[in-house]
Image 1 (cartoon, rainbow, N blue to C red):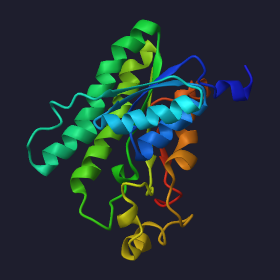
Image 2 (cartoon, rainbow, N blue to C red; image 1 turned 180 degrees about the vertical axis):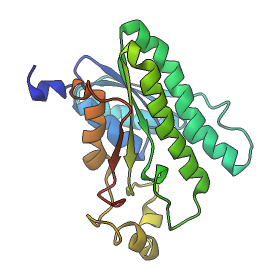
Image 3 (cartoon, rainbow, N blue to C red; image 1 turned 90 degrees about the vertical axis):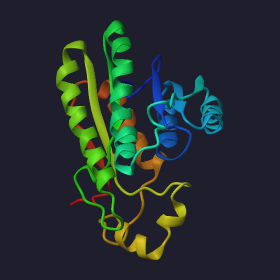
Image 4 (cartoon, one colour; image 1 turned 120 degrees about the vertical axis):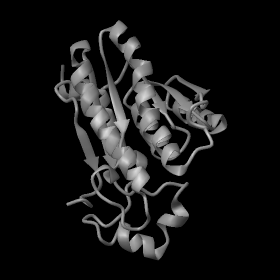
Length: 224
């Protein structure tokens, strides 16, 4: 198998949560362009359908469905809500797909953590978010060890500061930009498709068959 063939996702299906917009959408499009068919689990079904349409335009099959939210729509304190979404939600998704991967003889799980899992944000008080994302990294490593015998390889991506339509107003604030861009090494915001697409395709493809428990940091060198 040639090196480019190892990055191909032809004949494979990727389940992408939160792909209706932003980083999830960008990574779903990258996976589709690498050859995968995409199943989109999203709270906002119209947004998911829009992404599915973009994937079909690229010649791939796409299915959009509303993600169950019973445990994630509790009226609780901010700390509990953040951990329920960003840590418990990741655990539940991993737990849900693992039996299917075991049955088919293996698979790849790519969790989305954050640079905030090891670097404290200075432009806002995000202790709950930071703690949740740090938990995602350790969960990823733990599952990588537990599920290796099933040929399930579990890795994470930790994006740095990325500009999306959902955070554009805040990202373009000069005071915020001074912290998130000017203090960085590459000195620009990351882009979901252009900068994260390659990372998720690598971790989802055969090119990463000797990689598990990895936290791949894609932050433009900000944390150096």
